Image (spheres, rainbow, N blue to C red):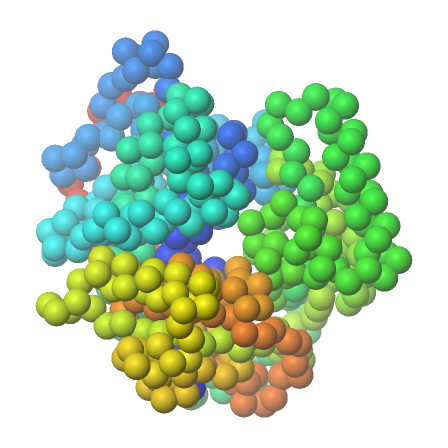
Length: 461
């Protein structure tokens, strides 16, 4: 396997979250499931003329203002996210939410200023790729995505700028934090000893799969009843023995339906509370009742459940890729265009993936036609792994940018496999790394915040 694209980490660090869902994960928010318009991602919220006229400066970060409308729009998106994750916005202390949102905006401004000072930029081609992924995740093309934004009073150029900012924040974290972390064997050994001794009943980890029947925001009672009946019918099929992954791929409205609805092994507190409650009494293989959230109706299957300890099974993926390294002779934009051409030629039957990899890939897997073999979760850099997770077997992703260059990735196969002792150590290394990354990132954010001059003006409303 290629060592150059491997890095031990867990899914969910959102190093390139904006390529699939426009998220505020770097500041602690989970990705939106498409509040408001039904589109995936935090699309800018419409602001009325009266609100624009009443806009004012809430705070100044160094020399850059944060306006009341910026805070209002982010608060609305945050409350929408809470609804979709099973936490009713009506139960939230909105004063606390406003304060947290303002703190996040201050941190974002300070980080973006640091990125600008150090020359970190995202070109238009990369933003184009991010916008295209958001559109495809919502089963739209880009013109239709923009048209729907305009219909809802949104500004597509503002959306693109927010995508660009999120990509900059992700690149900045990768450069300042992620690339500098090293995990020793003694740290892995200690984690494994701790897990073996763990008898805490709250140390629950779950791997759930989901089928989602989406409910439009302004659905009538009749539409809701029809969609609920559809969800109950899908659940009945699952209980009767229909392959759950097939149901997810053919009937689910979730963005990641292509991978059979599997959401990965995570601590229970990483899942929405309603998912944890719905599966609490189920054993591995169990199917939940239909669950309603702000996004729609969910059917959940328990793929794996463990109380402390390490995983005994894991979903492995067999993939291949072509890597183009960027530099003075090959810009990122040119690499993306070249790989887009490769993808078109492969899909039209004019070229062979393996042969192109042998001829063009800058990775050590090139002699093997780009074949990376079977991999377990946590073996690839987050952006590479998150892209793989969303592919169906045989599918080729759009060009993917990572710290190593630009990749064209194809998923060949996916399987469930027993975890070997060596793989357990690799998984443990990823978990330890994620924890260290989070701790290092929190310390770094504190330093960025302490160096920024922040002047508070009028409180947000």
